[in-house]
Image (tube, rainbow, N blue to C red):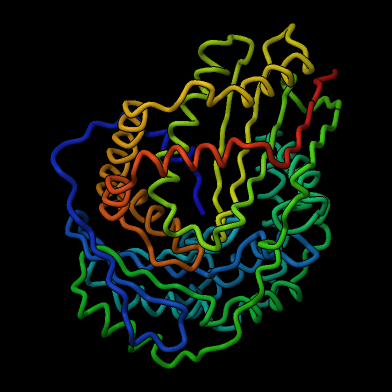
Length: 429
Ligand SMILES: [Zn+2]
């Protein structure tokens, strides 16, 4: 999993000194868990235990939202078991596209409790009478609120549904499915996906590797290997010749909007792990070219939002959301974007451009090592795909070792003609 937008938002942080190296140490006594790691760092006076279920919203069954509801139940059940009541504290979990992450944080002396809280997530959720039912309402309200705040979510969903030709997996049907949420489906999801072989554990922060190894063995050593649930969404591949365009009119929009989705299938690759260094640099180069062309040089767009995603099997998805200036027609905007995409690499990518992109991403990685929340999401990024986590210093090293040729080849592959889906959405009163 990889969302570049996240890192771009913090481009202008001040850096100081060289980054401290953070080694990622695999732990072997982990019972049936998919993997367990310790990433020691002295930068923060805290310990974090991330329990990553390698299934998320893309793995939703018929009713989308099930992974999210399961997250609420498992988190509050763990709190009930260890802290004595649900809602003893705020929810400590998040459901992402391909994973659900439970984070328990505390001071170094809290570490045993953090391990117990993490371990309890695997137990069948058990909650006081009426509590689980009320979580359905909460999940529905959360989802509707999120939707209301951002019509972009809705447009993206339609673009992806057209791209993949389905309402499931990457192309969810979130809102329409809300009434179908049920506890039964959530418990079934827990049973199927919250199995040891589908779990990665990352202990990070101020902790000795030996201590972490001993605690993981003590709390997870008894877990057993089991079948790993299938990831059917990974087989979702649009026809490369697809050029879908749909026109929509809506009063929910604040202005005319275009949503563009592009899918690139790296047929010769089966894993994205060795592409991480090149991916970070290449998307930075392309992102900067796209932003220049669409936003800085062409003042017809009021807002440009670009998102990159690379799946564990190296499928790449590019999403561009364009907010139009008044008086600029959707058709003209569509033409303008098509032209920009077609000509983006006319001027060869220069060595300077690559160095600049590399430097930006290295600085971002160094900064991530200094901010607890950022550091955690950094470790989580590729670990959510079942790969070993990449620490900021390891990524910086990978990027340093990435050649210009790799960046240029990857850019060419991403920009070559492939399946696209466009939504031209007109604002009406
Ligand atoms: Zn929630």
